[in-house]
Image (cartoon, rainbow, N blue to C red; front, side, top):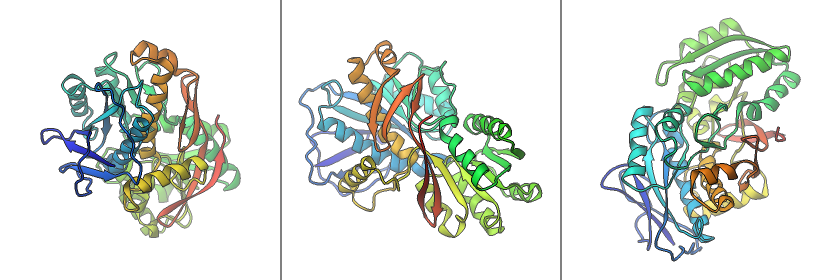
Length: 397
């Protein structure tokens, strides 16, 4: 079957059409998007009133590097849900809007999805600064799932946040480096917005409580030069640099870091370098580079093997690589399907009541919401050239 996505009126919105029409395979926001789904038929439920889900993924800015991977995974998730009857017996129709750029601009696009395109729910994989604006602007309008890793403490927002929080993401890896790699001196570098600053607050306190020391902490705005940071790092002489640069912001810094000769003697630990970003950094620049996350494409679990096989069957071996952020997009749709099934409703009150204790399946395995936070394992991976190798698994906290 062909999953046919077309731009609406020349704008950056996509919808799933049925019956599909075969077109040349391409994945461009300025063209029709067609993808073959192996030999599977993925039948669409017969009811005529689809559930429209607005997909908010980036097409511009630092996080656009993983945007295509998010789109592909979302298409697969929607097709799989439709194969099993959709959500509440209704087929899924995907809409999409660009979640890159200024938060205010994203709010305007999201409002268009809800007010003009009829989106019943939103699923987003984008920066936390965008989430904060969206949660305020669209509070109480439609269910809004924020799928990627984030800084936590969003209980005052009317958002279903299901990604890793700092305690879940970094506890095990920080202990590992302090205990097994003697990394006592830490230098924190991040982009200047809510997720890096909140994550660094947690890491700084955790390192201090375990007898370590933060010898430097610097922030740079999105799109700003990072070359001056290398001098500060050399002067401070840390054992490890903790990186909260996001998306393409990671690329020039890590290239310069290696070119300066720092990678052979200073460890790097990131919470946001996924597979697309690693490819862009370049295999010659990844010595002693590690990442902590809830998912890696290299995971050797039954669930992930099935996911990647279906992904390759659907889109071929040249489709964008999957990583923690794009897999979160897939997971966001699967989560919403499970949440609606438990609530037997799309109403916000019913969905909110069904959130606590919900368990749902994804390529990571089983994730369960406990005390308002999604709980699952975290992995530490080492960059081996242009790919990750998972070296440690840390149980759910």
